[in-house]
Length: 200
Image 1 (spheres, rainbow, N blue to C red):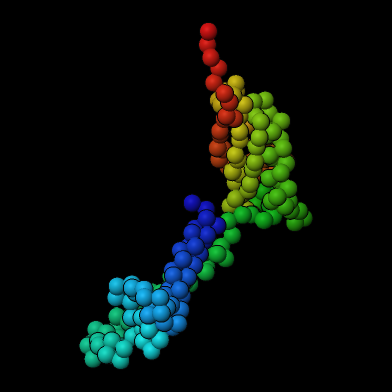
Image 2 (cartoon, rainbow, N blue to C red):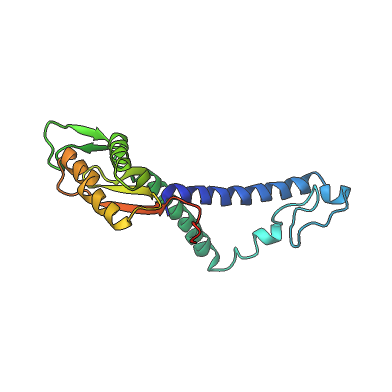
């Protein structure tokens, strides 16, 4: 699963939890349950305006126990480490950005923008026989880029010949134009939907 999709899922879940908790807190603060004769959720402490989330007895229930403070500190440390891991994961690049021409040992600091190479590769793939649509994007690091290709085939095309033409044509030209001996690629093939033909 891509990092952006994971981020959207986590943000959506966090938003749903915070929105639900906020609505319940506002309902208790404005006495909605008593005014409208509604039943609050089971076990929810904020049922009227003067209620508190945690009473004094609840806040000090386990403070005299020997395990309480180590457990509380360990839980907070775990939350901190998870947040730090998530932050570092956002800072890690999954796209090369700029690709040096001539491979890792490029001279004169000549670089090619990742988007330019992706667009050129996709345009070259679209010119291949049996291909109706194509998209390409570069992933990896600037020193070890790779291509992810999404190809839509025409109904009468042969996937094997299309893959072979991709390897011998656009991918070979991309390697040659960037001066690289290797450019790993992963291709996802799909077929254009078409109406079934009735045989007579």
